Image (cartoon, rainbow, N blue to C red; front, side, top):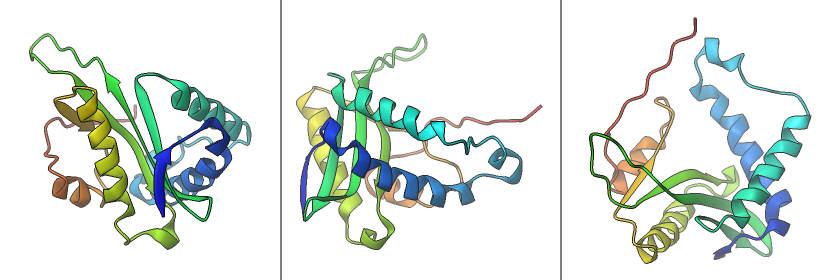
Length: 159
């Protein structure tokens, strides 16, 4: 297995990993929010366009883990302006997305991808990394192992 920077030609394979993860993550949503998910076919087209755009951005990076030319996982991060009126924040990386095909989970692929993204953030002089995760997602335990800590809690309510 090897990790490399994603190319726009990888979008169809990334979509396979993305869709498997998205389907599995439905269980993290409470009943009232499951109905908000868009299940219409055009959503695939829009996601592919967004992936291509993100891959091409200068301030972001997609890395893929592949085995025998098959993408089995990916990670996406970007450098963001996290300026805030109350906090003097340093240059910040944002871990936006990470997913590994179910059959490849438990093989430290996400940790390997994370280390590569973290190195890219450091190369770009980031001093902090943030991420958002569903409050029911068990991946929080992995993020804690990677040194993340709870800093901000965002709540939601349907009206």
